[in-house]
Amino acid sequence: MALVKLSGTLRSAAGGLTELEIDAPNIHQLLLKLAEQHPKLKPVLDRGVSVAVDGEIYRDDRFRPLPAGSEVFILPRMAGG
Image 1: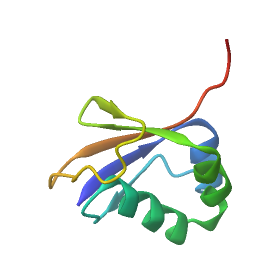
Image 2: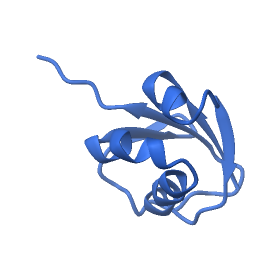
Image 3: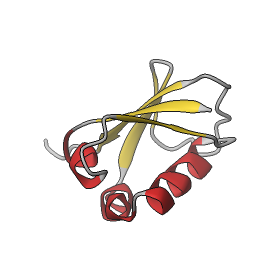
Image 4: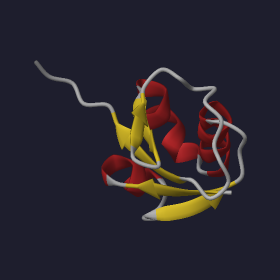
């Protein structure tokens, strides 16, 4: 199980939840399960998010294994220049 922490628009789309536990073998599966459990999150996740696992940010390594007890922060991608 990973402890997933949400903020900003993700929190709003998840009905105000700030954290939840999800059992997933990797980041990709975690995001799929998150969208399945909270369908309003899907459009935000589809636009792109950054994922930090135990303090390390992963942008493109979606099949990175999640160790048991991981702390996962999901952040909406920011645009800008």
